[in-house]
Structures are given as structure tokens and as C-alpha cells.
Image 1 (tube, rainbow, N blue to C red):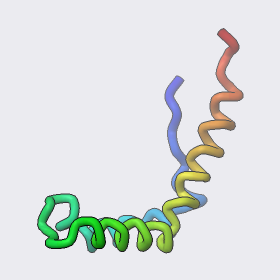
Image 2 (cartoon, rainbow, N blue to C red; image 1 turned 135 degrees about the vertical axis):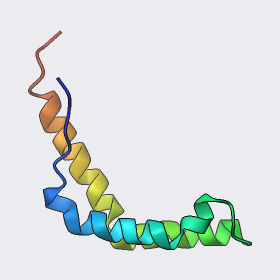
Image 3 (spheres, rainbow, N blue to C red; image 1 turned 180 degrees about the vertical axis):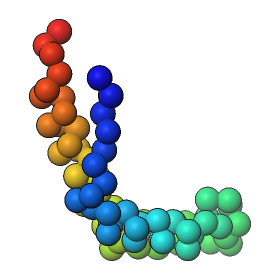
Image 4 (cartoon, rainbow, N blue to C red; image 1 turned 45 degrees about the vertical axis):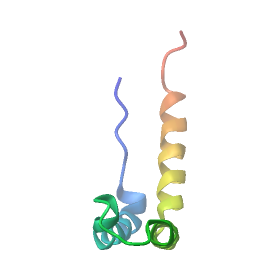
Length: 72
């Protein structure tokens, strides 16, 4: 009964988001001086990389999957 995300429709965006995440790895470790500014920049770069498209695709797939579940 498990859900499996199909990455194919957003594989380019996933690659871009992973690149941004690696670039801001020090933020995750608390190793930046201006955390607030760096976090805002990080969020902006994630959006530019397509994180919202990934989230929307995941939600679309989950919605489609839940329609296949038996009624309880």
C-alpha cells in the first residue's frame, strides 16, 4: 500500500535543488555568520531551482495515489 514518488517529471529540478543544497551545506551545520540573510538567500535559490515544482508534482502524485486506495 506504499506510495512511490516518480522523480522523472521533475528530475532536472531535483538535480538543481540538490546542487543548491550542497552549496549551502554550511548553513545546515550552523557554520555561517549571518544565518537570517543566508537562509533567505538559500530559500530564494531553492525556489529558482524549482523546489515549488517538485512539491506540486509530489502533491499531484499523492492525490492521484490516494484516489486508488480502498474506501475505509
